[in-house]
Structure formats: structure tokens, C-alpha cells
Length: 92
Picture 1 (cartoon, rainbow, N blue to C red):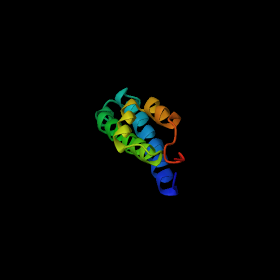
Picture 2 (picture 1 turned 90 degrees about the horizontal axis):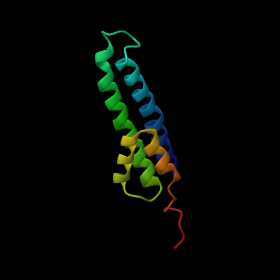
Picture 3 (picture 1 turned 90 degrees about the vertical axis):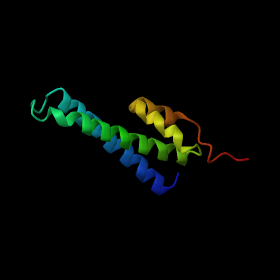
């Protein structure tokens, strides 16, 4: 895994998951009902960022970028991709 992929994965996973949590917190009215409307857009941006991070993780492991759509499962998709074997280091 290159440093560039590593940076992208960390940004995608970290910021994306935080945005999802913030969006859900706003949806449940933790910051007040007037701001709750921002919950959905923030959570959706978070999902997009996690998918982007998962696509980079899949590419760094030697898989195609469409496996990044496992990011739609949020943390579970990230865990699945993390546990998949690394094909880029396979000798053969």
C-alpha cells in the first residue's frame, strides 16, 4: 500500500465516519430542531466520502474500485475490505 493510498483511505474512513455520526446526531435533534434539516445532507456526504475511501482501499489491495461500494455498509463494509486478502502483494 503506497503512502498516497494510505492517506486517502485514512481521510475517507475517518472523516466520512465522523460526518455520518454528525449527520445522525443532527437528525435526532441533539443540536436543536432548526438545525436537524442539515442532518441528511451531512450524513449523505459522509457516505460518499466513506465509499471513496473504501474504493481507494480496494485499489490498494489489488481489487477494482467498484468494491468501494461496500462503503455503503459504513463501518461493516470498511471492515470487510480490511479483512480481504491483499492481491497486490501476491507472488505469481
